[in-house]
Image (cartoon, rainbow, N blue to C red; front, side, top):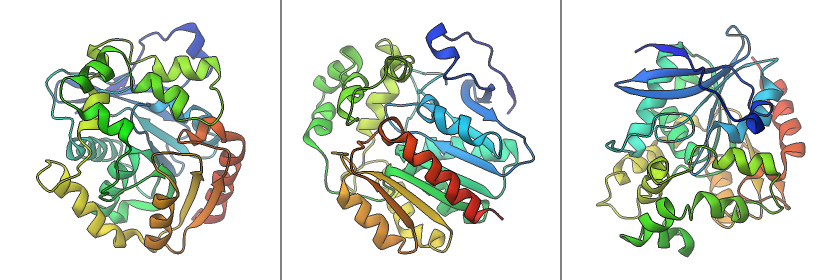
Length: 300
């Protein structure tokens, strides 16, 4: 594997808010894009996004932490500025393996994980496999275990034929999220940035595949992988954890927050009553100082 600078131009509207050092790691024949900001000698922070976002979602947090840490923020395969292959497994295990390859390639140690949405299952999965690589965790409206609950609006996107037409044809997932995942209207640059990589049928493949990869039954290909992560979460219980939670999230709601509290009773929890699923859009002014304080208090 090798990595190289990503010099592909971005539209003017994104250049100021997403003005970062961009690189690509070749995994097989595909580009795996990641942001790499800050001094390589500083403590690394790994930020893992969910669906249907990309590393752009962390833009304010990257800018806030790059002076004191090394910040790594990849785009999962099929997302953001990573390649979007038509033929690719797009399973939870594949995304975990890609993160492991990035960590290994960059030689990261003593990692702080910041995860949101699918980034929780992916990142905590890697963490349970290699607990010695991780020092602490920041959790943002996510989960890392099996659930029997699925909102009807997400379940509808899994219906054969209809789901593909809605998600890939009419952008009914990413576009809808710009309204439904927030408690207040997005700024124009935020909406433009979140939707930028997902502008046509081909580029929305991973969005659909993430929805389809939610394992609700033991027969699902990703069920065993998520079950194993759930079983091994205890390996991370004694590590410092900060949880920031948007309480108006209709998907990862208060039930999921309570499950985090039960699994990690020592976690420091901050609730944001006026924030939705995209907590870093709705409540960045409160969340970022809280994260910085947590990092300062737990730095080793």
